Length: 226
Image (cartoon, rainbow, N blue to C red):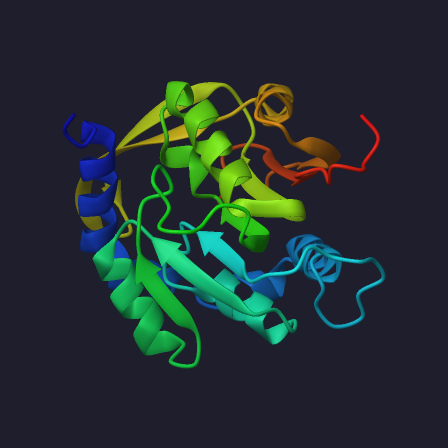
C-alpha cells in the first residue's frame, strides 16, 4: 500500500515552512507557564530531575518534534530525549538549532523503535495533522513502543473540525489541521490500552483560534489495578 496523501502533504508543507516556522515560534514556550508546568510534570513522572516515582526505564522520544524546541526543553529538564519528525526540512533546522540533541526522520505511523523501549513519549501538537480515522492506529503504535509504566503526553487543538491550510508561515502550502474532541481522544487512548490520568483544556490565547487540550496517560504495568 502506498503512502497516504495526507502524509505526503504534511511532509511537503513543513519542508517548505521549516525555517520561517522556527523563527516565528522561537521563544514561545517562555511565554506559556502552563505548558512549561505540564512538561515539567511529564519530566518528573518519567524520571527527570526531582522525580518522585519509580519510572519506567528507558529513553524518551518526542514524536513530531518539528524544529526541536520541545525536545530541547525536555533535555534541559534532565531527560535523555530524542526527537523524530516526518519532515526532513524540520529535522535539519532542529539539528542546526540544537546540536547537542538527537533528531531523526520518521513517521509516527511506523516508528523505528523497539517494543516497550521508551520511558516516555510526547506528541506536542503533532497528532493534529492526522485524519481522525488514523488516530487509533497511531495510539496503538505509541502503546507498542512505551514500556509498562511509561508516560504519554499529548497536546492538541480542542474541538471537532478540520481546517484546510493553503497559506502558512508566509508560504503557499496545502495540508489539513484537525481540531480534536478531548473526550474522544481520551476514549481512544483507553481503547489502545492506556490509563488516562490527567486532562486539561485551556482557553485560547494570543493568535489561537480556539481552546487547547493536554492529556497525560500511562501504559499500565502488569501489576497496576484495572
